[in-house]
Image (cartoon, rainbow, N blue to C red; front, top):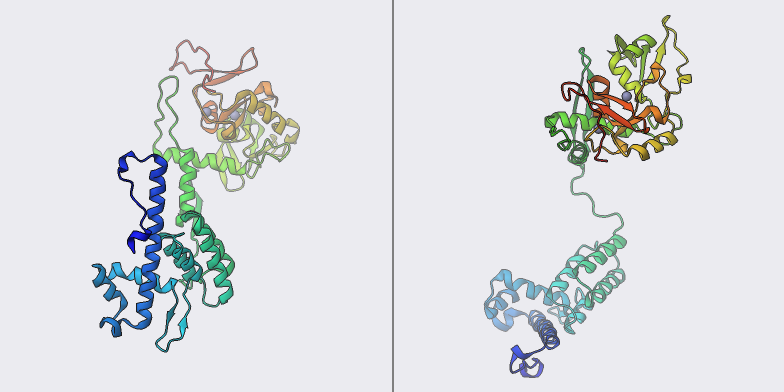
Length: 415
Ligand SMILES: [Zn+2]
Ligand SMILES: [Zn+2]
């Protein structure tokens, strides 16, 4: 029998052209599949007749294992596959239809091999028992039809679709009470004006938080003065957290607020706001330094309620301290990010800094504004660096004397 179906090997395989080689592989593959399906038909017949009566073995698997020199574990898939793909008979002779007839037919033609058969059978076993025979057969025919000329990926995609149609509710969760997401966060203001942030996150929320922090907590590259980022990881993550909060409260559609929703009120006297000396009242939770309030008020990260000397609120709206969305867009285009020398931060992470503070009468127009990231915004407000508008209408920075005794102006050449 083997001579009739085995393809002929060329006399000298090494002379074969590439088409001939490919053809040979296809032919042998086909033969292996057909042979494996034929083997299955034999095994199904032996199972139907009863292996005990025929050969005295307890199971077809143990008999086949012996005859093929296989372990029981190795023999089992052959026999199970044979019974799944071929009709068998009960002891009284009634025919038992195969579990997967369309797959059996494709296998017998040599159109699909053991791997796809196994895949289809696994999908079929996930179909719930209450699905009708017609629906199940229809699904099987579709899978077997696709497997004839598609790969594992497509078969698995179709399998998922089919299971979705047949079992739209999905499997009952194994655990009757699935774990609830657990997220806790406490924020507490201490007497010294710092805040304690403490929390507990489930795995999914924790991973997202870690990814977001990581993206914003990268060390700043060495700047043009050779200065490396010396912040600890915890400090970088702290700064990243503030960037994320700024991003979250940014609302670019809100007119007249420079894209910052002013969620927090800070109440401060005009004198304190101008000098940066004294204290401000932070939304009834406590005090903050006037210096911090001045920084927060610069780009209206907080809405200042400015009081006159008599303690009455001034009509600060007229000070027009808000950067309009149009101005902000123009700033983004002009500055392209933080303008501090050596900084890489993009516009979305920047505040619009008033070079002359609006509280001191500085106008809110492009000639008085420049983008600064939160780190450099703080540095400009609290440190010894200064920024000014140069004759060409672009910002330039004056380094502190300890960095450059001649205090030559510098610009960000990186963006
Ligand atoms: Zn500022
Ligand atoms: Zn910067």
